[in-house]
Image 1: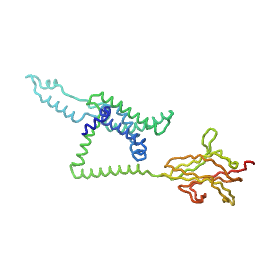
Image 2 (image 1 turned 30 degrees about the vertical axis):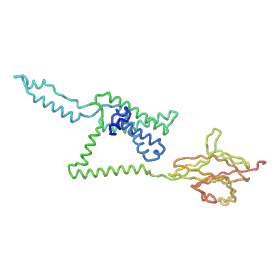
Image 3 (image 1 turned 180 degrees about the horizontal axis):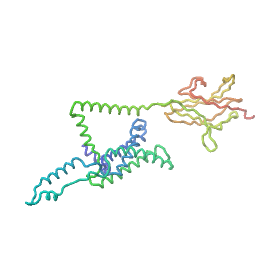
Image 4 (image 1 turned 60 degrees about the vertical axis):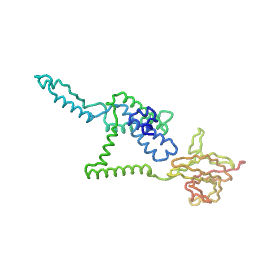
Length: 370
């Protein structure tokens, strides 16, 4: 199967798209894959394609829809053809003897072209693509903020992709409506042949050295950007550990903690853990009921009883809420309920000194008869 047969396998609307619009469509599809496919969205490809998807593709597609025609000055080939035609007309002898040469030349029609054509050139398209993308994406987010979907990953990605593909469809329709000579096209073949000539057929050793330096600089820049994307700088590593209750409206709040319970009575609490350790972490929570004394601003544990323990494993930048039923097993005044958080397995005797994080409540526990 040759390359033409492979090209025929593509849908006809995609085959008839101009090269630049087909590239925009393909990059949009790759971005959707890198964002929503479970295995790929954990790789740096999501960031690489996502940056172009947000900062360039919407603006380029919108500019292509606004300006389907080629811009800039006439090509050199057209200018050369015009010059040759004018020269031929000037050198043609008069057909009627005795006719003034100037009159004959004036009556001979010559081809002229307007140096100012509608549209914009490639550099302007690139600059406007970045600028419009930076303006379009926040506007889409602003509109989504007033919808039931809100500003979340899936609505934003789907909406930006829909806007980009819609602009591509409009641009393709408007470009096909123009004569082939007036349609905008990216001269990628000219760029490739020019780059090949500059790299492999330099005119001097100086040009060859400059080409090598340019390639090395580009590779260094690409490598630096790739490393920055693949290994982003880490901020402060920490884990959040907090205790919440549920109010009558069903909302989780840091208030309304129990201060008196009967022995065996159950109190509903919510233990929250947030992982900001930049790695997948296993946590263990140990719940103890302690009898303590205060001596010279120091708290000493006289007796401790383990009420419960549970484990959970969290990825970086994720949060877990554990519904916990606090059931005291002994009576006493000013008993301390302490929640100890450990990374991994706790020691044989969990204490506040060995815990990574800790929380506590003060409660009075009475007999059910009292």
